[in-house]
Image (cartoon, one colour):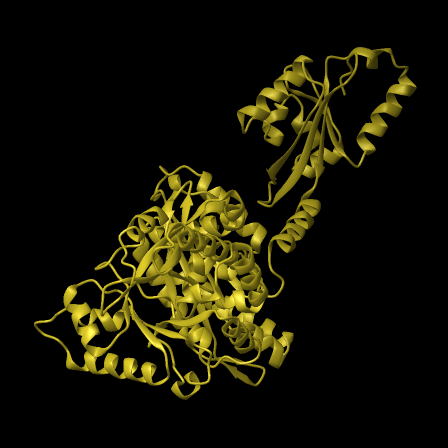
Length: 586
């Protein structure tokens, strides 16, 4: 062993002790000079590399342990040799003479006052294998042994970040996101043990489908994202047809019965399919689109696959945007009312008006009720909005009554949602608003849909009776579209029926009139009159329709023939021309 620097100052006994400790050490070590050549090494390094220690002298240390295999490590190693860096530590895969490989942790650090460096090599194969096993457990689902959510997103992110110009790359990516229909029932009736077996069996079939549809010699990644949710990632997809074929194959595979622990089970799945250019995708957006599309598949009837539709998604996003801003919009005063006249068919005199709410949305412009009322009912703001509409309409009707005493006052008709009856004290609200505005109860008509009124019992019926007792008119809107219990109709406190526009539209083609349409409407009008109810026909657009409705005996008409819904100022102008004999609401 050649000595350098401070080693030359050691006594012979100290030098022997140094050499003995160096050679007896269990850690493989070598002293390397400033040129990167091995000065000396211990027996442990020779054993690790399968070479006699003497044969390693004067050989480049970097070649022995792979320090020159990449430029970054090589530059760091040269810095340590020059004394410009305190330490280098890296992990290398070393090939032994017998062909076996091992993973080694290599450390290079200067030996003080010598100009040499000390190279140590530690076999970390067992540690690395344990780490790999732990990582596998961490990234795989224990029930199905598929990659779990963490590994799926890791792979998805890597796919989106990889170069789209490699060999076989298409620059596109696809995803099938599915869950099992009715899986909870399996767990609830047969237990989680059978449920887990079913999940494992489903995983096997999904893997078979993915391997059959794979490209580049390998299958697509199948992962269990949690519960009964699975995903199949298609890297370098060739288009939507490839994803559609895969989705069809998955549905067909899952429709075959499963035999599990003496139980024969049949399941189905709903699948959301997304395919797009990698450049237009992010992991978050891709999963949001897949989740949305899976919801559509379930909404469309389950046991099916659905392809992501940008237009349908835009509608959904608009719906979400409206839902999130509806409640504060009432407080900000973004709503207004327009009024459509209800005209007597016999004399063409306006008897009343229907109040129709408009949302003057700062982003989407003026929205009609069909765009937001159902949303308001779902998330509960219909009570607040309905109260505002009722108060505003009553205040306006009272203003017309005061400003135009020369004519019989118009009644105002206001739509009431079912949820307003259940979730608020509608009777108290109406009483309070009538008292506050001074509008006589007979000049207020409340419209409820046929489905809300027919079959009413308990609280809704009590509410209708209380309102009727108060003097408020009750009208059934869109009559003829629901499941009417005509016998029950006579026991309801209803004043008017509004025939749905589909009946009136059947009168448009006068040259080829359908006699059945007229017969049906005539029967409904006659029934209503026998019950003491007035009848309003909606969607009257032509004079021919008005004539036929007048001949049948319909009382009032509403539609573009007379006027669209207009601002209250237009109704005010119209009132100035009404004759003195204009009929009252009763």
